[in-house]
Image (tube, rainbow, N blue to C red):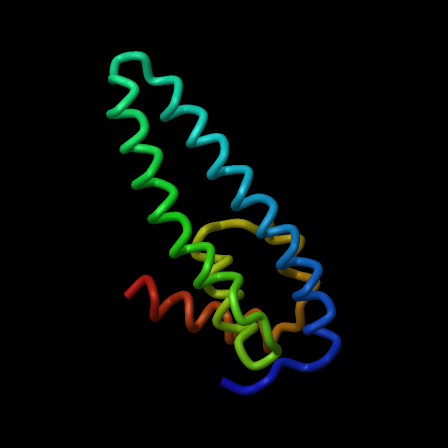
Length: 110
């Protein structure tokens, strides 16, 4: 991976913060839903929440850890995989960076 240009890096850092907030909101909303499932015992709910957090933590780490210009396109692809940014937000990035992120996303989706 090569570094993205400085102007995209500045925008990416802003978009990354937005995506992180949305990801965490989704996780918390799902935890609330799992915890409120009265058809299950408290222990079953706990286990469901534990598994969900464990799985989402892996997604979060992959999309947000080691934030550098050299990993930004890969992180952008992961953010797009989880649909955490709007088309309008993504349009702030250069066509080159969006295209590189889309290529990685296409590979990831297989």
